[in-house]
Length: 391
Image 1 (cartoon, rainbow, N blue to C red):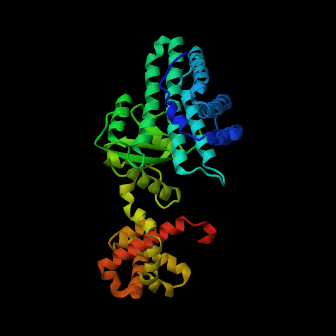
Image 2: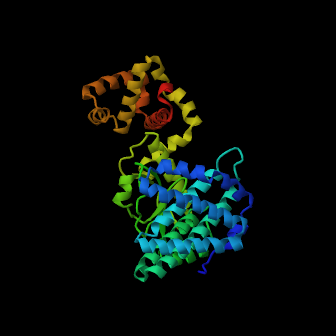
Image 3: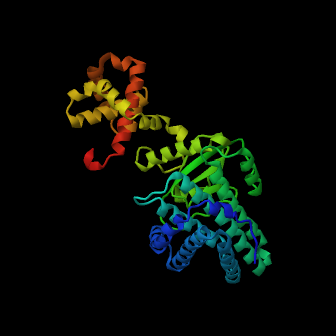
């Protein structure tokens, strides 16, 4: 029997009721996830079996951490040998385990009996311990069948450790630096001075993108994310398959703050407030992020600062508001604003004269102009977040 470093304490800390809640939903939840992934038929069958097996084995360990691991490790040792005989990559099984973790998190977080954050945190920690240990067993079985694939075994184990390191770096409150350093050394991931977290959303249904070995990423989480170092840019293949929003570069202990801004930026892109065609950097969309948070304060200020527009019929009011924002963004340069609005410069000049009649000296006051620009940005954010029939 292969012995690995499964931390049974992580499973002993999880309430047994978690397993009872998961078991009845295994098949249905696995089917729902497969429908989202839209895999090819030959891959879907293997993926579903792996997802269901991963969930059931996790339940076994929650219910009986000691004896349960003996059965689970024997199963994955055989799976590792089978992969080597068929010439398949062990990463397939690891992906199935990641998907089973996603199913478990979704299932436990759904319904009227939601688990509290403390219990969910225990489940997440146990899942990572489980996947680390299983990765080592599969790799051991694989190596026993095909010694020449030892490099794959090392890479496979490192992937599991790096996934856990990502989870640790993004923890709130920040994890113990000594624990982070130890896991980073095991994962062979040099600790940088600063990092930037990124939130991602799939562009197209299909296969999970293969991630370069040095990148910390978790695409199986309910909210997929990754960490990049310094000025590193995510690989082109990732940008092709995923919408990627990167938060600001911060010290290592503040990685969770960077991820929070990245997720808010991704939300704006999802709502159509900012474009999502290329890599999205939150630092380039500060006004939109600020006004998205301002909420009620912006609404109250708009009633005063944009009051002159209320004297104009609604259809024309919207055109004037769009023109005013474009002029404010381009320092009242009619030619630049016309290109922004895709209209003739003379049309912009005509609207500018009307705006001067409405607002008077306020358009000469830099502070008033800044307030109006922020308010108009906020209106754009608000409109993008509302259904079309409500606009």
